[in-house]
Length: 211
Image (cartoon, rainbow, N blue to C red; front, top):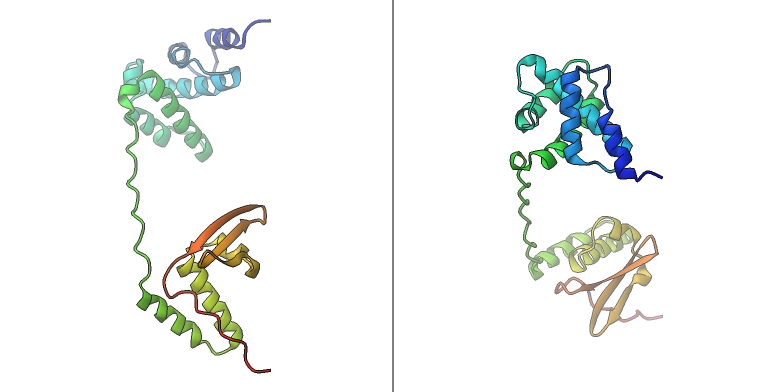
């Protein structure tokens, strides 16, 4: 049985479609041979992208060499301006041509600079927590007051957000080691513990009323 690598190389070598000129097909074969794609289907997609690019660029007078046709500006102009392509085809061509360019002419495709990370925000101050709890206590009904206080305690106190707030239950809140811990089970299958350490957020327990 012939190895898949040699089968892919043979497929690339005999790729001569009628939809592009022989010169464009030769360019595509050369650059995709250098890419050495994994599998015939992947090679077919990359050959189509390189052949379409060369078939558009060569009649415009561009040299059929990787440093010219695979230059980011040439590939971008092709994916934006070439006629007769759907939006999906343009996006697919752009992705494949960038893949080819990074492997054939990597000097033209520098690594993306990492985006800066935001620093963690300062925790709420006791005065801010008191203000939130005062707003919660001002709600018109007991049910709304309890919901508002719970939202403040879980959000500002334990740092829960979005899906964590949706999934949390009363039984997930526990007093442990002199503090309060919220155990969140996303989908009730995966647990994470969040210590609620923001001062003043968790009100002390009130003694039961008479009767």
